[in-house]
Image: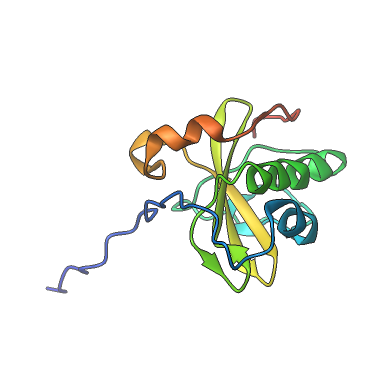
Length: 145
């Protein structure tokens, strides 16, 4: 009989941190970020490429391509609001924003480039949870897939 794997899949809970003094101001950092998305969270063709949704990944709602600039704007709002995780290379490794009343996490995938996904389980919200009060709230039209 095969051994059971020790790895347990799950989202590693993030931590909202203070803005480091050695990093550019939030407005400057926000202006430099980009949002590409990631196909593993999509069941539809998107600017991130053809759909490659995996059942063990968070599934994003369907956003028309014309709405994607609003997703980038939401990311930038989260950074300006300092609702971010630890920094890597001058950029926050994570940022949190409420989109359509659902918490979304953006993760740094490259030098200033991010992908994001919904955080559907409050047990996976970043700590301290009280700091999510500062996270922006935006509405972006979508369709459920």
